[in-house]
Figure 1 (cartoon, rainbow, N blue to C red):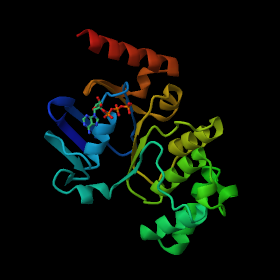
Figure 2: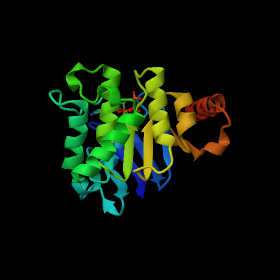
Figure 3: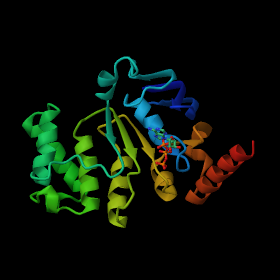
Figure 4: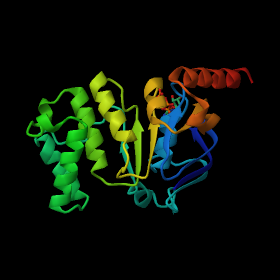
Length: 241
Ligand SMILES: Nc1ncnc2c1ncn2[C@@H]1O[C@H](COP(=O)(O)OP(=O)(O)OP(=O)(O)O)[C@@H](O)[C@H]1O
């Protein structure tokens, strides 16, 4: 479980970008963090993974205090930032996946099994023997996603996972995230892609100017259009208060 309680963050000299933010990520959650540009989503993720220290509040990852033990807490979280490029360009797709699998202490057989499954789901199998320096940007993004998953961490954080991906690749990512029997326990996703958010999310948190303006489950929205309407209404009512 990840527990964020009353987190405040002020960038010097006095720009407060998170205001008393609290949220929980528990097993089975596919939590979508929706907010306009500059709302504080990336800052919140950076706080949870211990890259940025909050000015007050607490963050625990599986009981580990992130502020005191960021390295230990981070071991439980695999993160893919927007336009991530975490692969070695002089290794092939398969070699990269095996390398990161072995680094994460899977046996060779287990690393191979996971790499093959990952390539199949993300449609990277035809590129298994290609050097990653020859891949397109979208393929590299899918590989970054696969590499992060090779970590086998219980929590997965994805920052804008569909940005710049073609329709089929978006479909692969969506399928992967909603399949049964995941290797991870919960996922937190930031996105501006409403149809993707609606298809994947089962919990939603709307953030505006560093404040959580609404949170709830998927039952509130029967269609992507509902989600968009609800989101815009929450943002606008926050602006008018
Ligand atoms: N290191 C920093 N120093 C000062 N201000 C910062 C710093 N990093 C971010 N900010 C500011 O904090 C606010 C929140 O930024 P953040 O990147 O967390 O937003 P975001 O919701 O992820 O935005 P986007 O959707 O555009 O990626 C913005 O106003 C940004 O300019």
